[in-house]
Amino acid sequence: MTNKNPQTREWQNLSNDHHLAPFSDFKQLKEVGPRIITHAKGVYLWDSEGHKILDGMAGLWCVAIGYGRDELADAASQQMRELPYYNLFFMTAHPPVLELSKVIAQIAPEGMNHVFFTGSGSEGNDTMLRMVRHYWAIKGQPNKKTIISRKNGYHGSTVAGASLGGMTYMHEQGDLPIPGITHIPQPYWFGEGGDMSPEEFGIWAANQLEEKILEIGVDNVGAFIAEPIQGAGGVIVPPDTYWPRIKEILAKYDILFVADEVICGFGRTGEWFGSDFYGLKPDMMTIAKGLTSGYIPMGGLIVRDEVVAVLNEGGDFNHGFTYSGHPVAAAVALENIRILRDEKIIEKVQAETAPYLQKRLRELNDHPLVGEVRGVGMLGAIELVQDKATRKRYEGRGVGMICRQFCFDNGLIMRAVGDTMIISPPLVISKDEIDELVTKARKCLDLTLEVLQG
Ligand code: PXG
Image (tube, rainbow, N blue to C red; front, side, top):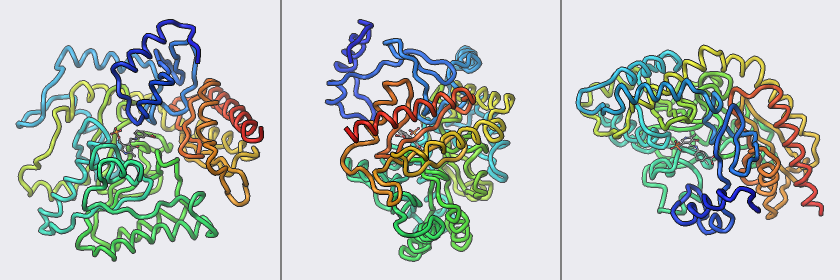
């Protein structure tokens, strides 16, 4: 890429000289140089070369209310002047964290009225692991330690988060998973369903939970954690039979259920939480991202009343972070949730824009490269294949990455997970902007097909 703006090269040099970027090949990044994003408004980003880019990923699944809302900046600035920091460790609290706890209890599923705050989703899941084991120890069942998770699930990048996640490429670095975490197959019919119908496969995948509980012994199992819809794994919407069967299994065995709502929470499915969308009854829910629309880091764990009642009997919970419930983050989260509520953003997603997005995305099914389009709410996935009927891939061609690059070069951010293209735009995207997104996506599919045929 040749630069028009001389400052771009200066920034890229700073990156080369001093910055280590997350989830990146450091050497490759030095060769190519990062794209420098300078500002954003609504659903659009601008880079230092003046390109305007439609952000089909809401940052990293987080910018629910869109970019550039002054109200959040004002809330942060006001709180910084009033009380920029104080901790919650030694029998102290402050108004923003208390107000936010109340508001989260109002929007969370019934009976989930307490929140433990963290700085991120990963820390939320670390908190979960510690809390689950502490809970069972208080109940006199300290052996109930094992957490069952799923292959290709994503639960963060700390040691516990990456261990809970089922990403083998993450496990390979750092000798993970840590002991006491085990993974069952994911409900990814398109990729792994073989000859089964989606309904049969959904039951099969859910039954893997029961088999694992029986294999380990229920007396050794603390919890099952899952994303209602897997995000980073490729927007994997489970077959309709999956969650009902999981619910039956959870009702049968005495284990906790943790819904990782870091992506699904705060309106992404058209409901406040993915658990509302599927009628799940979690004991704990991990949150982050949409909680503050990504304007400032904050995560947490929402905990069911019955679990809190047990924890109340356990003395000190020896866990917490300097920035747990940070007052500025709490003030921003409060303003973000106020906007989601007052502007009826989630209602609008459910009634208007998500059905429109899902309808328009499915029009891409007629494209020769597209094997499946799926999605819920403001989440979508497009499977790229060589043969629609057999779901055969273009092996070894890096089709997803080719398509992703065309998207970037044509003013659209659409991510690739292998050969699955995924989108998760800001919840405030309009119908006109959805039209633009789908038009650009089709163009990039055409360009990708040309490369494959050329
Ligand atoms: N749970 C889920 C379901 C997530 O998606 C986390 C936990 C961890 O949150 P923090 O705030 O610690 O990052 C996430 C984060 C990707 C990608 O490639 C996704 C996430 C993070 C980084 C990359 O899609 N999700």
